[in-house]
Amino acid sequence: MTMTDSTTSHTETDGSEPNNSETTDEANTQTVLKTDGLSKSFGAIDAVIDVDLEINRGEILAIAGDNGAGKSTYVKMLSGVLTPTAGQIYVRSDDRLVERSFTSSKDAEKAGIATVYQGQHLTPTNDAATNIFLGHEPSKPGLRGSLLREIDKARMVEESNQLLEEIGFDFDPESPVEELSGGQQQAVAVARALIRDPPTIILDEPTSEVSTTGTDKIIDLVRRIPEEGKAGILISHKIDIVVDIADRIAIMRDGKLIDVLKNTSDVERIDIVSRMHKEREL
Image 1 (tube, one colour):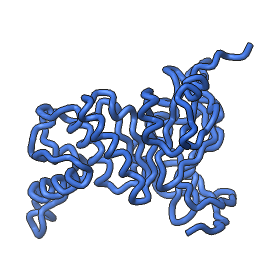
Image 2: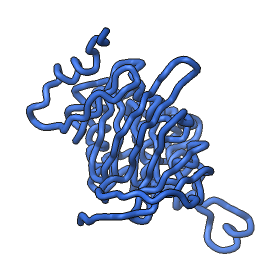
Image 3: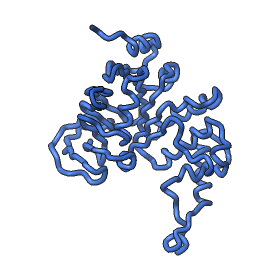
């Protein structure tokens, strides 16, 4: 359902409760995440420059660019790893876009942005279920949970197994992560993001350490993200994967957003590469 939404924008300084701010109008109720003039400098180096971008529910937005284009720095600001030098981040909450200011990745998670990092950031000696629930372990019912704070491992294993099956993977969630294949490890990382039921999921090079067979499964997994109305942001240097998965493609070069292309049948891979690598104008 689409409707006109006249909302009050708020500024949040600690990633939790927003403070009153100026009133803004937001017409597109499909937009779940938005940046206005987002910028990041490291001393004299401008890594990201004045990026305006919207991410909508039910879509995969790919951000493509060469090394040093600014795409990783941009998503690190969205995920709370880096603090912007300038600009605003807006996240949809209760049918309105609310300005957010993140001081950590936990702030971004509380706002509904989950990130699956390149390299997974998993604990290899723990099993898959423990990694999926890390930081959100359920307690056993009754006094054993409330007083003794015992973790309900059986529930973790059961729910992990169910979620892994839902996203197309079939392996024992009690297996140590270090014994899993690259694709299975990536599935654990994605499952950890999904189990928090976030509206927005960022995937940073999800196929970089995965075999060909595992890549196919990860691609299928990413395709399923929009099915429940979630938004996915895909960072990948593999143009074939970008074109295969994305609904829209945002192209960055030298820290700037150059184009946002709707991924239709007439989009040419060579055109995307050309826009990514176009020589700077003198």
